[in-house]
Image (cartoon, rainbow, N blue to C red; front, side):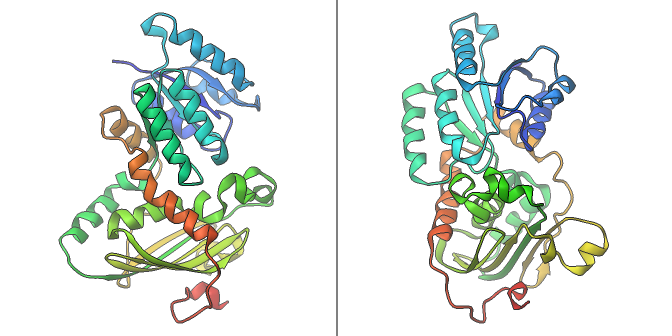
Length: 313
């Protein structure tokens, strides 16, 4: 059965991945909202999308559809708005009679999840989120391999994704709106680490500023050194020489995990899983939201032998 979708934040950077996922899973987009009106991208997917620049009018439209014929009702609302608005937009969607597919991070602070769980129970609708690395084929293979082992592994995670001056000017550069570097660019990697190696036993943070963070996490089955950055100057020389602007690296016991390919359709895979009843809900998201909040609020530790090599610059 074809499902009807609406999108909140359709003018944002990540929205086209959701638009493609809606189309490629055989569903249809009926309504969208964004305070910015540069949304010509919609015509690539449908010429019949009702578009709004005011969330109140969008909300009113969804309520009208909810009271109308079944075939016109919105079944899912995809949320691509700024991080600090996610919980409010989840509430709007649930109260409109729809389920939710929300971009990561689901929320910035873990206590916001409690209220959302209560509204799920009240409305009998569900919130799902995008934990796309859990559906990456190579990472699924890695998890299956690790589950057969009973060792504690040494892991290094480095993720550098270059951002220009616009980043700090936008909401993404404000920790109270984005959650800072650990939440905004790191949450899906932290989710991956716990999915692979178990729950958190301890953390240390060695560096924390507007552009980069570094630290150490002790998991049930791993000791993890991690480094996150949005500064292009942190890119390794060989990456710069190749003209690339992003560097992802995870090593397990000194061996590189190869997962650089296969990122383009991960949102679609998450949508497929969600529509099949196997999506990632609040329970799945809670551990990474809790961890990133703890990292964001932790005091800076003295640098010791566990420090990531990038900090030696």
